[in-house]
Length: 65
Image 1 (tube, rainbow, N blue to C red):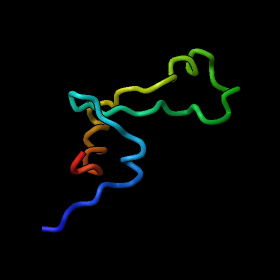
Image 2 (image 1 turned 180 degrees about the vertical axis):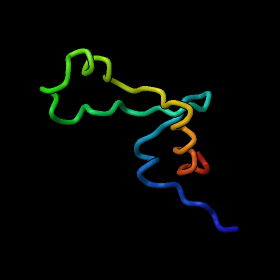
Image 3 (image 1 turned 120 degrees about the horizontal axis):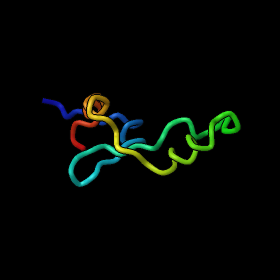
Image 4 (image 1 turned 135 degrees about the vertical axis):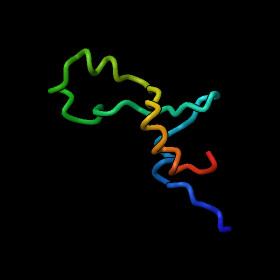
């Protein structure tokens, strides 16, 4: 069988914890920040753990993690 390729966009956007959960950057932090509430901007600092239903889709793009 041929080897599967990892999606280049996925390996740039996602990383893994030691227990196998997927870490992502928070969304909606690039531009138009004057329209966003201060609470939203504050809570979306740093990284977050992806939900399990979304993580299943990401794992299809990263066969060898």
